[in-house]
Length: 196
Length: 184
Image (cartoon, rainbow over all chains, first blue to last red; front, side, top):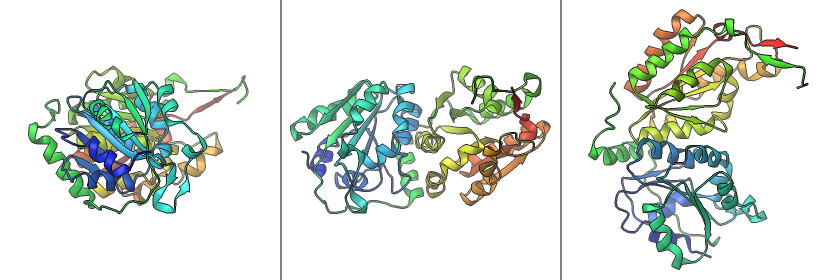
């Protein structure tokens, strides 16, 4: 079992120009705890939509790597998006599911993964190029390498312990999160294909 | 559905000019991603988008995925549009909060069912509240009844959405797209 904060911290070490989308609740707190960054798009709602935001971003910026970090509850709610991603085959997209098999924000009720519902098998069935379970911290460097150069789409189900962690609260104002992200990404120039 | 009951759209009733007008505005404003759950009324527009190498066409398993797609595209400085049937609007309600909270510009083209001679009453409960649901969700809504108005309304809607980071929905009425025919 992984300790979630340490795992996420190791994934985001020396992140370079990695683009990160974090799912509501603990995943957003984990990403914030690893260090605030303008290229983090923190979600505080829109449950089930995190992986699709990653897809839209990955399609828009094929020159950059996109990492979605989210919980098992969010991924299960948006499970159909694994099929949608599988159709588009974005090489630059990775989805890290921080899977504690519980709904952490609402009182630790069991999620479907606790009954053996298998997100890795689902991702492989949806034509993800790579999908596997990670449960030891010494595997973090290999996962980090996948985020930066693996052939996507990739899904990692990170089996984390269900222990409670202190909340680390980043920006919550949506316009500010968005504008900061776009400004940081646009330093290299606006998509030249937009000719309007 | 029984095997001997099929739904078809009579080709003569599907006017193509309005689909072409929408596509021309997609090109004009630089739409680069189009998410959709197919509808017969959007079939020509979907085909045009799929054939365009500058547009990523994304077939969604449910319409709410498209809301995330639009947001992700905008984070990457691309413009995106969504195509759906009126029934799909109901699937999106909570996800629409993403657009409103962050101010993501978005154009949704909604083909209407459940009105004007609808043969299938199962479409009516959602179709009759679609525009109100969109308004309550923060959208500006524009309804088009006649094919000749599509160009002007879609043009204005695209400009408002992307110049002002607003959420704009254009409802293409069942009268415009042609009633779905019930064939036994």
